[in-house]
Length: 290
Ligand code: ATR
Image 1 (cartoon, rainbow, N blue to C red):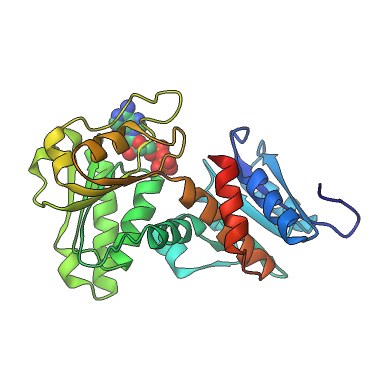
Image 2: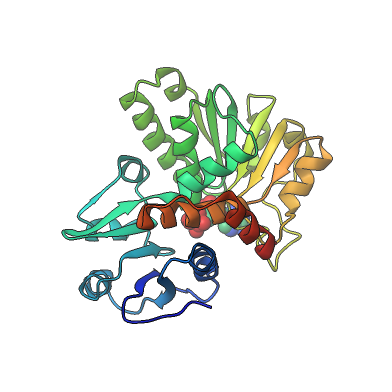
């Protein structure tokens, strides 16, 4: 049990709603395992974001995670942010500095670490992204920065897929990824049969299939799944989504989003505390959340 006293440093998460968050459990498990005198609590956000951030800063809260619906708006409340977070346009981790909070996107670092663990290499690969919300946007930027050969964004609402396509293409041009910039596509779910590539890595970034709708899936086209050699669902509850089942029954390998969730928390913890969280602690957290 954490022994809270007058010296205990305080961390937390702001969002609305916040009741479902697993972050306090993960962060407090790390502090306990590593014997670090800090506590992590949920803050239900009921005021304007500027007031919330000023309040937390005044109280000396050392680090804050930010979740739905604030990941973009929070950018205007920061003293600075990492380039990748700026490119994506989303921040989920704030670190206290004397000048204000500095922003990071550890969702993307978390996914990068999950892919490394699962030995999924993006360089030279054809990627399909299902969805065009905040999570899909972050995944698209990660794929571009890791040298994917092509990116196809598939979404119910085409305009949102087109927006991500334009922003990732601009990023690719800015960073000299000219080959990629002409191989980014946006299609509707109905047009999924028009995907040009075999042997794709597919990321499921919609909330379709999230518990309690375990049997739902955004795409049912078996022809599509035959093209998928690796499928990563960002959903972690249920642990075995319908998307993952489709991928596996077509012969591919699938992963859920639990490691991404844990690694985004671990990466925030490491940024805040300047420590490396040992593998054994990460393993114990994963086991306790399964
Ligand atoms: P997040 O921040 O987790 O990415 P989001 O920004 O709300 O969440 O995005 C949710 C994604 O799930 C979107 O791509 C959304 O499609 P639309 O852009 O067309 O709304 C997708 N989505 C949600 N419910 C869906 C459904 N019933 N069928 C198809 N796509 C759905």
